Image 1 (cartoon, one colour):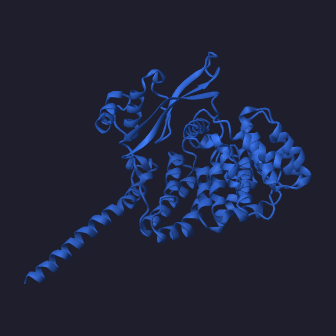
Image 2 (tube, rainbow, N blue to C red):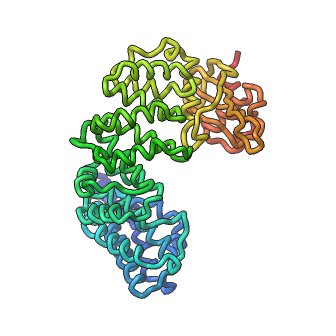
Image 3 (spheres, one colour):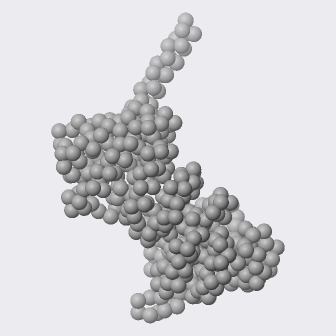
Length: 450
């Protein structure tokens, strides 16, 4: 009798668990079904579930519902009803990258991608003023990203057609699209189908970056820019005096080891004399990769400057010449300075190297966010004449755990080191009111009592 009772309990629990799981898995399907069948036609999907773009696609049934949603939007185009279409199409496209199930992926790859293609073609053929659009929701470009992620031949074909037709070539997402393509077999198909065609504007730079990556990895038999049109474009990029295009000159220089020698001398000279330090570093790498000893020595010299030493050091390692690294680059203080300067140079931060940086404080601490002892640095940086009024931009950042500068805290550069450590500690622990120094200081004192 107890054994029978135990069996019944186990079965009941199994049913309860199944019901809970089914309910959880059906959240997406329920939202989509309510949206399609609602009397308030063409409402926003996000009005039914504000977190819909965070939901995962866990079952083939949910994938089928996404396909139904795309059919629903396709009918809206036919009826010329464009209310909320921009955001809703973006939402459905986002769900294509939330797959947690192989069978669901197969449904979207086989049925969903053709429907995305249909909606993309309808969308691009509707005049911009007819569909309420905004810069945040750009479903057409996002759909092209999905084509790069999936393995559907028709999706790849639609992506290539968009590239060839010079479709919105100024959009930043092209860099992501070509980066994804470089990670799968799509890149080979794209390069083959484009042939001698070189995309324009930022799409062209992103294509160049993809080709450079493949060339460095030894996956290209011939660089697509190894041609007269390619040479002319690379030269144009290297000759541009527009500071906003200096990063394009870096991309152009990265291609030089992989193009015909009759182009290399002129382009390498342009790169080596370029006003931007990143271009000159790239030029030293390119020359060193081609076997030029003078370029290799130039890379070694460039590594000695903490402001931009990180990149030359990485290139020396890539070239198998790490043994040539200057002695100072192996010192912990130098590496900390180089780390912060490299972080500051990222396009999401200052986008350039500081004019100077110096260690304000250095100490070993038990660091609660990482639960270990480590050496922490507070580093002050200076960008000369950087502010609108022509004054210097001076700030502080921390290195040792998460390299970061808390730009939003006014006057942080004038805080004593203990308070700066406290603020960064609370920030790394994601605590509320982390800008209050006492919150993090109390935590640090608890673990770092003398």
